[in-house]
Image (cartoon, rainbow, N blue to C red; front, side):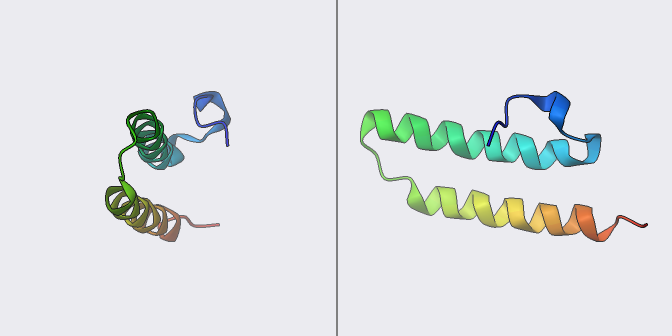
Amino acid sequence: MDWKNKALWLDFELPIVELEERIQTLQDSAAVRGMDVSDEVEKLRAKSRKLGKEIFDKLEP
C-alpha cells in the first residue's frame, strides 16, 4: 500500500497512516540489519488496529 502519498488519505485517517509508515520503516531497517523485530511489529500493529477501531467507531453517517 502506498502510505507515502498522504493526499490519498482523509485527515482522520492520518494517525493510522503514520503508524503504518513507522511499522514499514522498522521492518525495512530490520531487514537490512538482519534483526528480528516481529514482537515490536506485532505491538505496533495491535496499536494500529486499536486506533483504527477508535477512530472509525466515532464516525457517524
